[in-house]
Length: 256
Length: 274
Image (cartoon, rainbow over all chains, first blue to last red; front, side, top):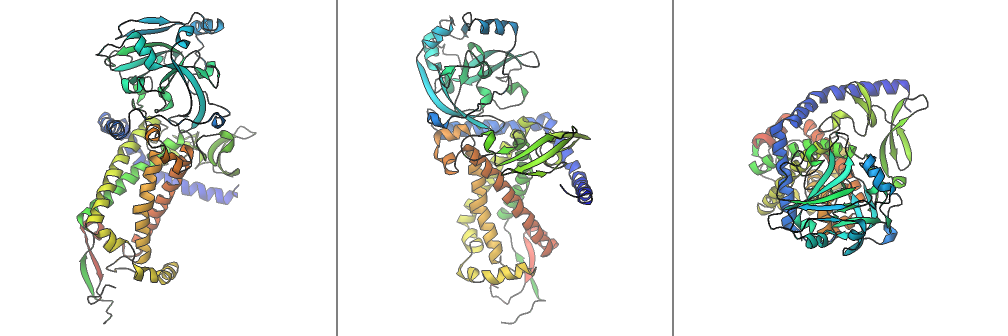
């Protein structure tokens, strides 16, 4: 602890620094709120997306770790329990009544029970989960390969994106949703995961099913999945940017 | 050789390419550092390795509540705690005490707004990289790098003397060529700090990591890369502070005229190279 005199001097210096920085900060904040500045900055995302997709191998696998590298505690971020009456009823019955709806631009729309999802070609992988906030955690995931599901229902040629619908309602009352393109959807490590570290997915991690897109940030990996919908564009889905956080300013391309 | 310190001559010291690239870098750092602190504030803790295990934090800015329900800002380094209320951990935003890593005046945007911080950071990261690549190519092809920046054997022989002079605050001013400490500082930023800060940034990208798994491994894992990225930022800030100090004490107007117009007044050495 600094002595009182030192603290006063420090406060004085801090206030001085603050006063000097205030107009600059205020100016930059006004820039951040301006629509055209936000529009220009958005161009950065297009460049990152384009360059990363061009210079990297589309089928490259995210690094897989030994099980000994798992995190002791895996943070449950975002919704950790949807808490709605409908979800609670499903959870109470061990998700026996839960169905995964596959719809949109597909040849054969389907409604799959949890055992049917578990019967799809599966994959197990121990990977690192990177949150947009900055933290990383490692866990083992087992799930149905998204490519197997898509092959089963038949993707129509005009489909460009896979939209994931979720059971959790956010504070705004809107349901969480996310989307990925077909490059990610057909990637070997893209799963609809029903197991984490060898056990059924816990509620905090999105029971009964969550998305794993290993080369993108955590907010893409939607939990509490209820439907997989193939679309050509995002128009008409919530605010039209392809995801709950995307509608709130985050990048649709979360590879960085 | 006749030494006439009072005689000066005009020298075209900085080419247009150097000047332009210098000021683009200034703009980039003015955006990249505060937007980086904004991103850091979303999880103001640093670790080593691939994972962020809460029990093994190297560095953290925390907000703790005291027994009498007062919020104190605490900086934790390797388990040692420092009260930094007002600056780190807890600071004042719009007249109210809030829990946040770096204070509002140090971040871009000022309010906690991760999405916008990322947009500023990545946009200007591209400008920083393109500018650095262009300047690097120019410096190589024009021989600016080898002729003016990389210290030669004669420079290095004078390293001890130059260091002694600098430590006694006896700075060479108005010299036509960079002195050995200047050369070492500039070269270590151009081929060391600059590229490393970009590589540690890229190592945090899960997409890049899938194609180049060696990149995060090189730094000891993704969380280590984040820690190194943070440390390099402060090394760059330290360089900038020192650079601005040296500019100020060795003839601020002449130096500024040099980096704006290209022309500076230098000591005349009768044709020798100082």
